[in-house]
Length: 339
Image (cartoon, rainbow, N blue to C red; front, side, top):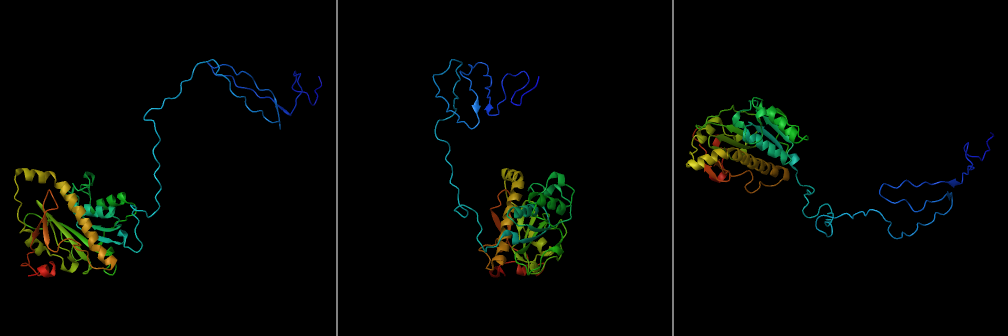
């Protein structure tokens, strides 16, 4: 049989018309009535008739309306977006020094000074030179600077890993020869020492590794107390004989049984609190050289040595520096306190 150009498929009696589109309605889902009317063919270009106004509801299963749980009322109010620099925003003013300009050389990484370095990094100090090749021991734990996995590792290597993990911008080094000279403002030395009850140093002295003009902030831990030395220049740092004579004169704490138990329980918290205070004092020492002004009132702490005892680091006792062993203590008090 010969097919015509306008004929449809074989066996179809309806000619093919490209202007006609046949639409089909999908089958209704189970439980719903069939559509009352199927749309007819729609020619291309013709106007589509408006849908008919729905009439009365068709018989069928009723669909329950969704029930809203919770209190009925308006939604949460949208907070207005604050513009940059509005009240409450921490926007540094132009021209003020930044903590990234502070450079700290840390000598002796016991638990307190290592935790102070961690606090300095949290405050924004990125230039940290940490030095102590000795291994991490049980006495160094408790302040959060080291973990039990660091036992036996060199203190400087363990602390460098901790600082890098806390802030990838920090690239700590170990080497006093890499520390900037006195011409760069914002430099200071943080020194930590560990001593026995008689004042003898349990760790070696770092030696003459800093510039004479660099300010020195040092703390010395001993059984039951921490001695904070006054801020002096590195040239007037305390020598081992001066330290031993002064620390041996620290009076023993007079506490009852309950106070002793509390001091033992709170020793880790006490060490962490002393480290946080030490970090704040280090920033106060470095700020004047960056700001070009005079030292802050009480900047760097008191001019005399003081004794801090657990469990409360806020309470301190003044400590007189013993100058009978050597003359290095002449530069370690305020001018009005020299005798």
